[in-house]
Length: 130
Image (cartoon, rainbow, N blue to C red):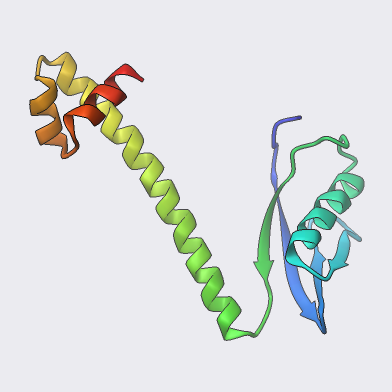
């Protein structure tokens, strides 16, 4: 599969039992489905056709829910928070590994490094050997 080159924004609304999506950056790129899972599949197909991409193109889609439903708005905020926390956790893993490498290179023992960083000695060994 080809690498993702850009993220497409899709505005999602609801009409009756159907989910509707419009990709504002691609003229005429709209679709619908009865489930969000199928809607995302349809959005991907519409983007590939509208932007003349390869059939196996990797397409990143950012859904923007345009609904007046407070429950959906709250759920979207939770989703966004989860994304931020996932990114923060990944940054913390990277920073922890870097700190461990520096301490070990400076001659600190695995046990002392573990105490300084706040992880187990086993985790220090794992990260040092990764």
